[in-house]
Image (cartoon, rainbow, N blue to C red; front, side):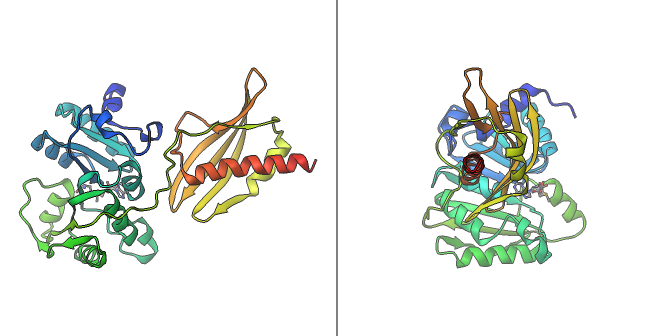
Length: 318
Ligand SMILES: C[S@@+](CC[C@H](N)C(=O)[O-])C[C@H]1O[C@@H](n2cnc3c(N)ncnc32)[C@H](O)[C@@H]1O
């Protein structure tokens, strides 16, 4: 499928280059209630909901880029101006990109169940996710999960019921659903039942967030490191609480160096290029490359500072 870049620009949001939390009023050019869909797949339900509710702003999260491409094309064809999609892990970005008590509804339809315990870390649903919901949902806002996996529905219901912020409705089986998603059609054809969990927020609880709500600082060095200065970084993992930072590779650039790095906050990983560059005026700057720029997180800040401290310490020891 060919998606023209202006369509992507219109519908796909790159929040790493915006202020955090995102100013949604500015993004949509209007003040309106916000509803979020996690894992929208091909975007069918997102488009349907947005067409049905022109007075609501919609934000969808997906992981694979082809889901983003397909959904932006759909949104464009449907001429829906009040929806945006974001490529990224909603387990974290939900909590990070929305102000506290600002979202009216979070919908998740047919998430992958990841039934094996060794894959549990991939499940969207967890007690930590309940905390994120309690952070972003408005009072009386709701979280809705629809799934063909009874166990997943029951587990979600159990965790939400145990959370003091939520009132959880009794689990519904085969509720009437005016729009059926692609996966839903598939499971119904196979004769499976559909389960729905709806939880309403009774009390907001702020959660810790790892994205820094300030513009990313550019750091400086007083010398341009040599390859010999930089090589030892390749064997080092920097850790501080839930922040982890690793230098994976090193490349020479015309104006200095590029470090291929990975930062992790909790399990939110970002891979990006960290530039160490010499400006014409002789200043040495240390900052992420503008291509695929990362979100400015605690791990990113900690990792960049750790690289700088290590280089300065090695330099001072001769
Ligand atoms: C089984 S598909 C269902 C798609 C669609 N909701 C439907 O019912 O047809 C689950 C989707 O959730 C997405 N997903 C899984 N984990 C996610 C996460 N942490 N953040 C955003 N999307 C996620 C996957 O990429 C996948 O497209």
